[in-house]
Image (cartoon, rainbow, N blue to C red; front, side):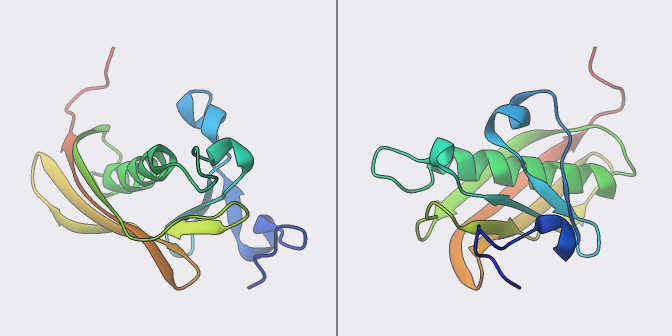
Length: 141
């Protein structure tokens, strides 16, 4: 797959933009690929920290959204909220990188979903995320 920002069309690789009118609209776009449940984003200048690499807060927001949406699917579409998210930053995300995460459900109980995902640029491991999502019994007001 070509990840050169000038020549890469996410739609041609099965990616669709994640629709969001809230926070993700400010830091996105994020992309989702239904065939394998992966999420991705192109690292842009707006994602940079003071030293010119992807801000850890962006990587955390990205992982939180990707793992959270996957947790909701695992909870049969019930709303879920993050109750714990741990990130280990292993390498830098560089501007221009196509950064992906493939969330996976570690375990689902009656009230919790335990999630894990490695954040990668190609084969290069950028960060690792582990978290727990609470399954809500009703929609928040």
